[in-house]
Each structure stands twice: as C-alpha cells, then as structure tokens.
Length: 427
Ligand code: NIG
Ligand code: FE
Image (cartoon, rainbow, N blue to C red; front, side):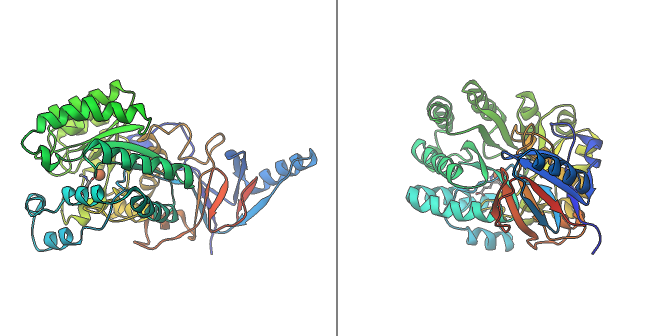
C-alpha cells in the first residue's frame, strides 16, 4: 500500500507567496498530539509515542486513535454563498444553449432570481437548507467555511441571512466566517436609483450589520454591469470604518481594475480574477492581498478563460482556491474537486493546490495564525483521506475521499472516538 502520510503545511503563519507555494512538508509514519482542541505536537510516531508514555507516567490520560490514510489540516473554504433557496436549473440549461450572463438576467434569471427566492422563504426554511449544505461541505473536508449574504439585498433579508450563519456557526462543527455582500447586485426596486442603493448600503445596512456583530468581512461584486470601482470603493471604505475586513469579487468576467482596488484598500482577498489585468497581477504580487481563484465557477459557466494562476505566482502573489459554492455559477461543495481543477485547469502543482486550501485560504480570512497547519498551537481541525499518496486528494476528480473529520480535536465525522491526545497515521 505504500507509506501513509501527514501533510502538515508547517511554516510561517501567513499566506505563502510565489515560490514559497512549492514547499510542503509531508511526514511519513507520523503522529499528531492534540490537547485542549489544539495541536500540541506533530512528528515521528515513535518519538511522540515515547513522549506520550512519559506523560502517562506523570498521570495524564492518553488516548490513541490509529487511522489509516493521509491526514491533512482541515480544509478552509474561503468563498461560498451557502445560504440560498432552490437551485437555478433554467440558468444552467439556458447557458448550455448559448445564453450569456446579461440575457439570463434579462429573462428574470441570475442573482435576482435567488433574491426573490430567499426573500420569500422563512428563516427556518433557509436555515434547514443551509444546515444540510454546510454539512455537505464539511463531509468534503471543509472545517472552516466563509459564508456570504447577498441574496437579500434589503436590510431585513441581508440580516436574516447573516443571522442564519451565526446560528449555524454556534450549532455546527465547522467554523463559519460571515461576510456581508449587500452589494451583490442592484435590487430591481433600485434599478433606476442605484446611487441611492449604494448610499443605503453604506449608511444603513453596514452600520446595522456591524451593530449586531453579524459579519467579519464585507464583499462587493465589482464588475462592469454590476458595481463600478467607485461604488465598490465607497462601500468598502464604509465597511472598513465599521471594523469589517474587506474582500472583493474582482475582475471575474470582463474586469474593471478590481484587483488594483482590492490592493489599494488592503483587502484580505481579491476573488475570481479570470479577467485580471497586467497591472492587477503586479499589484497582487507586491501586496499581501490573497488572490482567491475559483476554477469550478469558470468551468460551470462554460467559459474557457481561467485566472492566470502561474503569472500570479510568478509575480509573487499568494494564491488560494475556493468552491464559490452558490446556485448560479458553482453548485459544488467539494474543495478536493476544486484542487483537482486547480491542477488541471489553472496549472498548479499539487503542493500549490494543497497550500491554496489550507494556509492560504486561512490567510484570505485573516486566520493564518490559527488555521491551515498541523503545527503546535494551531486549532486541531483535521481531515483524513482514504488515499496512499497525499497528491491523490487533488487527482480523483469528483470522488469524496474524506473518511473522517475532526474540528478542534473532536470527531465530527467518520471516526467516532474523540481525539483527546494522539492520532497515529499508520505506515
Ligand atoms: O461568485 N459573481 C458573483 N457572484 C457569484 C454568483 C452568484 C450567483 O450567480 O448567484 C459568484 O460567481
Ligand atoms: Fe462568489
């Protein structure tokens, strides 16, 4: 069967950039020691076994969980729109038959269809749907999940979406990071009054979200035909004044200088980037803003142009990968699938694909100090995959290879025993 491995991703507690993404620590016949929900030690099995024996001598309780497979840090899905109603099947088929983004929106589809759907559903109904979907993300290995609002587009429904994220964050095993995306589209009732909508987002909705502590980040869909650079700058500036971290849907389809704006504002991330300009690539390469690439979205939309991942890396940028899980452009819950697309569609190495869903995705959420590594002090979020070689996680296109998941050291899937101390990956 070959050797089993622990992929630690150990290194500096920040997103890795450019060539640094080529370095990945993989230990063979190793063990992980967990204490109080955090990683205490990671290293050779024999060495940890001796140390544990010593501790046992001192009276400590040691529980050993033997596992077979490859162990990874819990995956971090740093871009999802997981609170929504039904799927958008008609959009999918219209696109297959050649319709584009604008004609779909004109026919009543697109984001505004999901907005009507979400506005019309009860909080309980939406919460139940979101719970099932977050559970599916977790079963594919995502232990930290960013979730955006953006299918409400009015104060009441945006807050409803964010309260659902808060409730599920308290009830679910995965850690949820809520992002306010009130500027996902201009709602139809403001079509002729867009300046007024932007003003309300800045002066009413952002303050209300901040008052209730409902979001960690604010995002804007900055794209020709959606929100302009000027509007995005105004909204993100207001959000920053209210203590929110910034993210940006930047240069997805045509591009308008979104990457440059994200860097200018010191955003945590600029996401999509299939149409990023040369200046945008340079700006990202010289900044700590993480470039979050979403290859499943371009694939599902039937577009041939993917983000220029290698040019971003050559410029020195930090790359992350995410599902973009949403009903319009990316109905997938699988980060391993996205990793495989990262290799096959974006030209990433396996090391880069793994760092892009662990350390760097944590960086895109401002969590690189505590998530994304199997290293002492980090939260003990762990994922076990039923493979022999760690690279297979980004190879078996579409299969769910995750057999066990632990969050903060507790088993939430697969392995029923809690990992109170030791986790041994068998050779
Ligand atoms: O990230 N680009 C904007 N937002 C989503 C699409 C959301 C939708 O179509 O419902 C995205 O692709
Ligand atoms: Fe998105």
